[in-house]
Length: 210
Image (cartoon, rainbow, N blue to C red; front, side, top):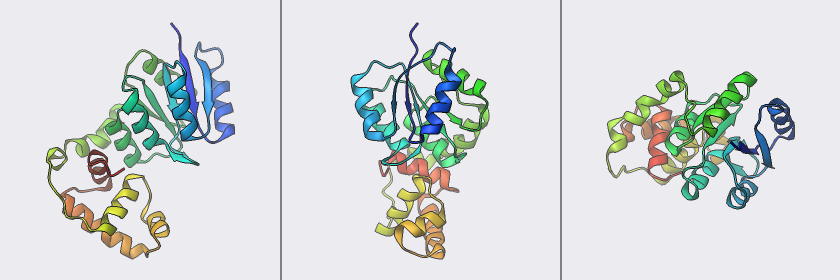
């Protein structure tokens, strides 16, 4: 059975390390990409069995890339591979249909196991990962088509929250103070009727805000 893999990562050292780790495993890395746009082109033109996808990349967010690939190739297994243990990223990955989320600090055996599960059409989510996001995915508000009256600024802050940015990073991105961001976040959570940023991120994904 073929095991054709695309690696998408903007760090050459990370790509080379992954290639070395996969030597002798029977997994064939048929293509590499360091940009989201290149990854989308390769997926459209190359027979693949699985994609190993980084999240924070120059020239495109990996989670947005995941969503775009899934629109045209819903059955292609995509495994997220990230250096960030961020519950917001995990929640978005689950909501967007990834088959798993592996940290770059994980043992090589864990990566190979997850890839082989992906090749077999199986999920590699751990119980702990799903536990962290189950509450967000099951929140009643998530399943209700309610028009939430967010201001333009609150929508901007929510979009950045869903991209996994911290309050400090959002403040810098939007050119506002850290305290102002904290206030906006509190208002957003209250208006959405959710208790944390992970739930807010899932809501934003389901409303196509990111």
